[in-house]
Image 1 (cartoon, rainbow, N blue to C red):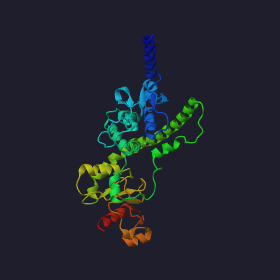
Image 2 (image 1 turned 135 degrees about the vertical axis):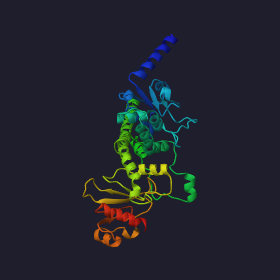
Image 3 (image 1 turned 90 degrees about the vertical axis):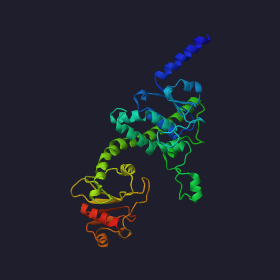
Length: 357
């Protein structure tokens, strides 16, 4: 009798794991990492119509095809992706941050998602490039948030005596997901099934919201960032035509997302000479006005490597022409990070003059 019951249970478990495919995660308070993990899985054909089971019951989790963020086990061959184990210290290739369930799912399934989006094979070079880029730009911060890892060394900040100027605790995707959880004093149905159904509905809202942000990032890196790479590479190769040490970069047709690509090229080349100013037309037409933009010290910095001259800042049109000695001036921002001229020659003259001031 026992063997018959055990056999029936095993058969039921196998059936649940294959038809329909089920994704298990924990119930209760939900977070950004498992919300995104579930969304990413459901982008793939295997999981398109998957059933979601939110529970901490080991017996129920055992029936699931894939389990994320719960279960105390990381084992990719059996589709177990939890990161809460004491011994867990897995990171994304060449990155220092311990993974959350989002990072685990992305590490194992991200290439398939990107390849599907691009319509290419998973081993295509561009898939690997975007796989790494989206992790660094989007997923890694979620991993850090869920694992309680600060972007800066707290001890170093304390030693330097730095204090926050304002609170930014609510200004993150993690905070957004947290706000979608039920409040502590919200009415809870007396029927446990109804209570769980209401909680699951809120989780799915969070998963969709996280997915929307991920999909926008995926769209950007596949449709905008990647095509821009060749354009930036070509402009970088021609930079010595505008300054003997290559401090001015020019886009002939129109501006593209250039910062990431520029920093990567500079890191690869090494050396002391860095691009200080980037010139580009406001729109792809022969009569377009031109912009001169200062290169930030780093991707996320508001500090420019070399701001436009202080004397030019905040002035426009004829007054700017008078002060700069360059005709065709349109404006220079009060912060000195960007300016404009009516022509390419005027913008180039602004760059050349600013280099020596």
